[in-house]
Amino acid sequence: MANDNYEQNYAYRYSEPWLQQRTEVSVVRVAQYIAQTDSDANRLAWAHWAIKSSSVAAVPFFWSVALDPTVNEKGQKITGAEIDAVVSAALPGVIADFAKNPPGGISA
Image (cartoon, rainbow, N blue to C red; front, top):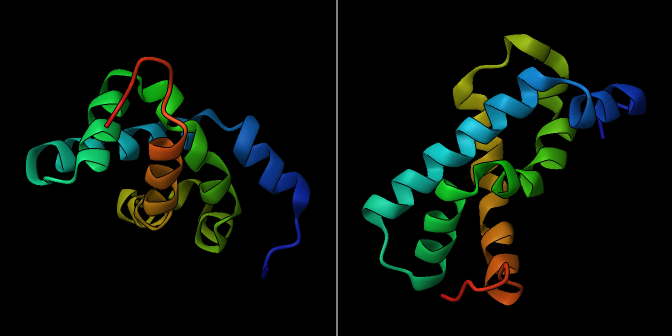
């Protein structure tokens, strides 16, 4: 990893509301896109759940964003598109985990 500043990574994950908020917005945006355009049952189930439960749905993405080299380089100057790229890259793994371990009462 290009950035070995563990304290900064930890702060980005747990103590930087601006990054948590922007990550949650990114998650909702991708969920809305999937809900409007996708036909895969797992992706749709995740999207509908994520839109209603965004504060919980964003959690699996926080470490990916906090550890991203571009986020660490740019800090608050990171663009929404750059955060969206990190969220999109993590999305397949998050949806696969959601399909295997859906929250209570949710099924694809």
